[in-house]
Image (cartoon, rainbow, N blue to C red; front, side, top):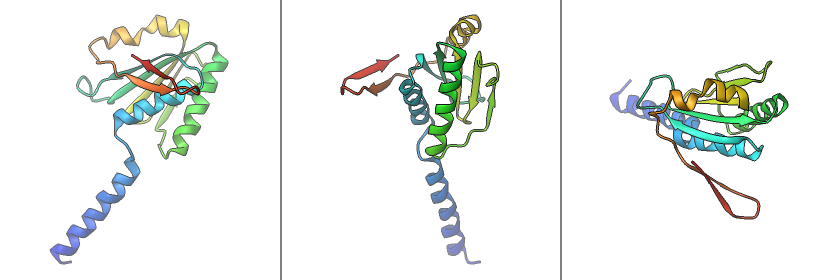
Length: 147
């Protein structure tokens, strides 16, 4: 293989890799928050962890009103992210629905029942993590900013 041919082959791999990524991890976290907001998730927070840990880049944390709501949020998020082409690497806690964790690699989603969220208090545990704002455009074209 000639050196010129090798370069074009490597470029093809990177070009396809970019297609798979679609958006960076911050945009992915904001998209997750938007999907959760569509199903009336409560108190949505995005924590940026990329400078604090190697586990993930972002946590998206929210609450549901009941175990049924937590399950509905989980199923809706799974379907929506799958339609966007994102792979779910793991899910934990769905059967109990007190705390569901969805692992999308660079974004980990925590969907809590409100009492469970207060008990574990991940926001306090990751107090040093910067909070990321996201906007949602409502049906009446007004904007809601979450902090």
